[in-house]
Each structure stands twice: as C-alpha cells, then as structure tokens.
Length: 96
View 1 (cartoon, rainbow, N blue to C red):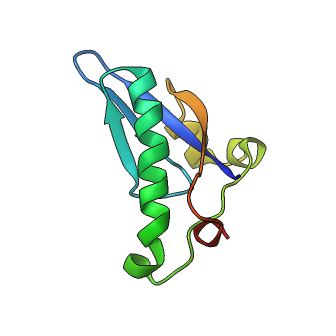
View 2: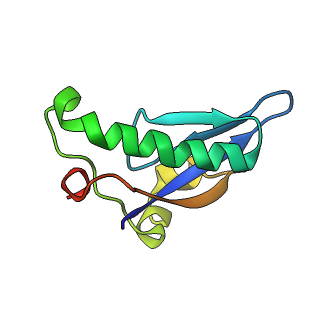
View 3: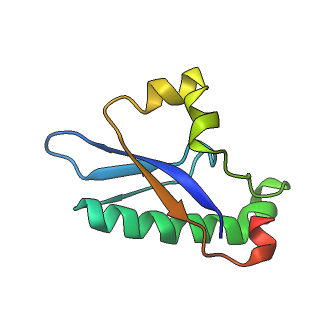
C-alpha cells in the first residue's frame, strides 16, 4: 500500500489544513489533527478513484520523504508543518 506525504498546517483561529505535495490540488481540513489525518486518507482515496477521468493522466506516484526533502518547493511548503505519511487505500489500479 503506497503512502503519500501530507503537510498539515495550523494557524491560530483555523482548522488543520492538509495538502499533498505529490497530488496537486487535493486538500482537506479537520477541527483536530486526528480528524485532519482521517479526512486526508479519505480525500486521497476519493481523488485516486476519479483522477484519470478528470485529468486524463494516471494518479501521481508518491515520492519518498528523502526525494521530497531534496525539493526546494517541498522544503518551503513544509515550513511549520506537521509531516505525515497517509496510506492510499484505493484500488490497486488507481495507485499503479
């Protein structure tokens, strides 16, 4: 089961926002960090199911945390973020 790196940000007076560096445009949020991580797994699965229908391309493959850390964009986006590995529980076809 592949895992995607998620960035979780929290600012004062806001919920926990989640984004995926390897899956642009896929985001979610939760009132608690536990809820945000649970919703992250759900939104990732939902995105994988319909990705090719909406984009005409295959669902992006996850990069390792080491590969992401070599990216200037990731290092900037990860500033003040909690980094989590979220499993993709979608069908094997969507993840391939």
